[in-house]
Amino acid sequence: MKHSKPTRNLALDLVRVTEAAALAAGRYMGRGDKNAADKASVDAMRLVLNEVEMDGIIVIGEGEKDEAPMLFNGEHLGNGEPPEVDIAVDPIDGTRPLAHGLYNSISTVALSPRGTMFNPGPFVYMDKIAVGPEARDVIDIDASVSDNLHAVARAKGMDVEDLTVVILDRPRHANLIAEVRRLNARIRLIPDGDVAGALMTSIPETGIDIMMGVGGTPEGVLAACALRCLGGNMQGKIFPRNDEERQKGIDLGYQLDKVLKLEDLVSSEDTFFAATGITGGELLHGVSYTGAGATTESIVMRGLTGTVRRITAQHRFAKLSRISSIHY
Image (cartoon, rainbow, N blue to C red; front, side):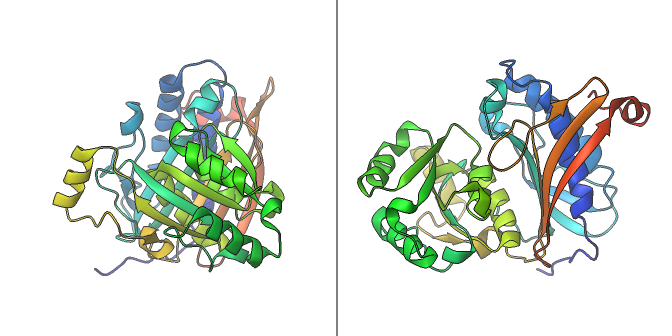
């Protein structure tokens, strides 16, 4: 397949997308209504994505596994003009933390040239390991937890007990957590939001060294796009939820034991990624509201150049309401 290569920097267009979604969703912090928050963010994200000069198709949508409003796989977005791109979206990475007023809920979107993103098909979950640039060449998802932690520690010039491992707080990770504790490494358990968890491995000020465990497949592709830009690395393996999903994947030709490397998850270096904080956390500040508007913090990056920008934006609702149909 001949890939259509973006000819201009779409990164700053994308940050407008995640800012709009975060501003719409931020109103629902702590209100206990995941679906209302998801709908607000999806509607805002769709509206702004359709203003971007691109011919986009959603390859990685969000919402099916949560039975929530969604930007669906195969949906065409943008104004229809070149470049032709794949789109991955997660309007709210961390719907539960947002609904309960907890940390590390973000809005994310990624683009890459048409045909370059991994299509997870029926698979909702994948096993993952992610690290930053210093340890990018030493991880092996088929190796033991001990081997991986010792390899990462050596690559970073640290002892294993100095490492901090981010893991989703799920019953399925009981054995993983026990093994990390046995090795005396530190653990940061997160309730949701493993896109943010993967990104933090490549941003030193967060203090996270490695992410391990089973999380969402859509989130895995989004994280891969970001790690392409940041110089980190990630490996994954499909994790079927049941025999029916396993057989469906086999029938579709998926190799369930294959190690998915970063280049398998997104095969082009010319990727774009943007994220805006909804609730505050180690990665980004959350949306803060005033009587006149709101402040957002975002991170936006491009893989081809390796440029990473942090953007703090002031939004004036009196002006926005004149030109936008989004309810802020």
